[in-house]
Image (cartoon, rainbow, N blue to C red; front, side):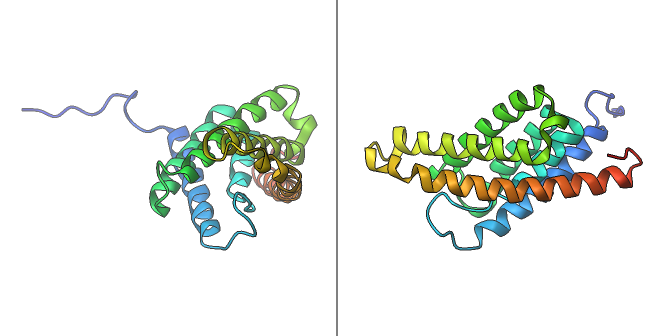
Length: 180
């Protein structure tokens, strides 16, 4: 019996290695954030999203989607929230963020920049989570009264994440000779 070498379609390529590396970084940040207390349910800095925005700017929506989805899936398995309400909220927020990244980015991702993309994604993420919380878990109008507080958190954390993503992207650009 002879074993043949895997064909090119089944062996990992450069993009697979990029996705794995960026996903590992995002998962590590996701796990670290889970270890810190939250000021209120549903509110955390979302610094793993910095990785998603940087990946989106450098490699596009397809690679960013892989990184974000792997982060949510593997991160939830590692912290023990897989298939829990937390997982559903995280997955829904990530999907909404990716859709908005694609839409806003198609308008000109370099015109909008990392901060604009991060803010749009943060607002989409929070809006999706509020919607799921209301429709699935707490179908009471009182949950909607948290919207201003949660959207303010999205504004603050989305801005911070966007500034970090812009800085990281700038450093990467200067390091690979592509400039600004």
